Image (cartoon, rainbow, N blue to C red):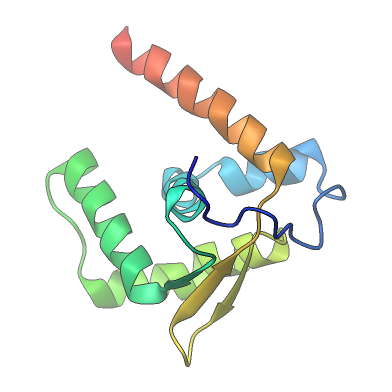
Length: 123
């Protein structure tokens, strides 16, 4: 793992229930965003960087991707609040920045989900 978010645990490190973590990880775009933020160097990332990542994720998954305005809207109104409520990010829309906070429980469950998804896709 890269240094993205290392040593800066979110305020809810221990308080998220398994159900809350599963809700956060229930969407493939949110899983991708967490994985990207976790693996990318640094703790603060631009919203544009995250939009470009989601765009690549959509291109890989569906062969096309929605426009940047749509992706920004989904990030700001859906994924961002869910990740922020879980204590995983602080996002600053006016400055177009997202700060990632490591959560060991979320990352352990994410790793298990990624392994399971890979196994299902191989079948």
